[in-house]
Image (cartoon, rainbow, N blue to C red; front, side, top):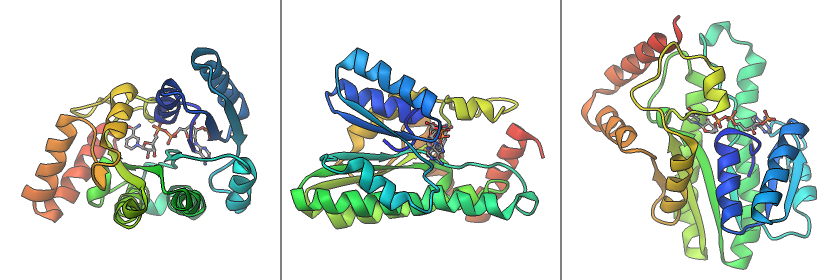
Amino acid sequence: VAGASEGLGAEFARQLAARGLNLLLIARRPAPLEKAAEELRATHGVEVRTGALDLASAELLSEIRALTDGIEVGMVVYNGAVSIIGPFLEQELSDMLRTIDVNCRGPVILAHELGRRMQDRGRGGIIIVSSLSAYQGVPLLSTYVASKAFDLVLGEGLWGELRASGVDVLAFAVGATRTPRYQASQPQKDPVSVMEVGPVVSQAFAALGRGPSAIPGRINRIASFVMRRLFPRRYAVQLMGSQLRSLYGQ
Ligand SMILES: NC(=O)c1ccc[n+]([C@@H]2O[C@H](COP(=O)([O-])OP(=O)(O)OC[C@H]3O[C@@H](n4cnc5c(N)ncnc54)[C@H](OP(=O)(O)O)[C@@H]3O)[C@@H](O)[C@H]2O)c1
């Protein structure tokens, strides 16, 4: 699980441990990572390794190879992301390029490296966490949402490519979910639907192997249907922008 020490990633790890899988947890900060690992070892009796690394690292491929040397990785969850809210032109270019490194380059590296090994074994699963916002442009979140559109389309394409060799891939378009990162973004109010991490992650596992992508939560699925199929695209983009401003101000 890449991005595993808190929020959705920690819940993915918990639900995988509850199924008896041994785990490799990745995040940047060693202390929360080790704490999450210790809890899983104690509660579920599984083996848990940790890797404190930055998914933006230029050495990501070699770091992943070193961490997974000699172990069979049956399932990858690419969860960690950079999500910076604010006017595009006022952000640092380096932060936006980092968004692309973590949210786009990272999943390509992990899916390529670990997907090859899964294909050789004829089985495996890859979940790439995308976002409900990935279906259209969103003012004030342009780079993040574009990166999540990349994740959505990457996961769907890989689903079509790898399923014949026994590897299931799912692009998972998560809506607003109560995680430490969500709370830290300090929305002035909640959007119509905010889900808890448990049901979101359960729905990812239920959807894996059943189609190229999935959206957790009925309200999120209805909202997505309306935005994609009923609204003209320019209206959908403007609506997302005004919603974001009502949540976060200018
Ligand atoms: N929460 C929501 O409302 C929401 C809505 C739509 C989509 N999503 C998607 O859901 C996923 C999870 O979101 P989240 O809210 O749980 O928060 P998140 O900040 O994306 O993920 C938190 C976890 O990822 C790790 N992480 C973050 N950046 C990392 C990096 N550069 N390298 C390695 N590890 C990193 C964090 O630990 P460290 O800080 O120690 O590295 C932490 O363990 C993301 O892909 C996000 O885009 C979330």
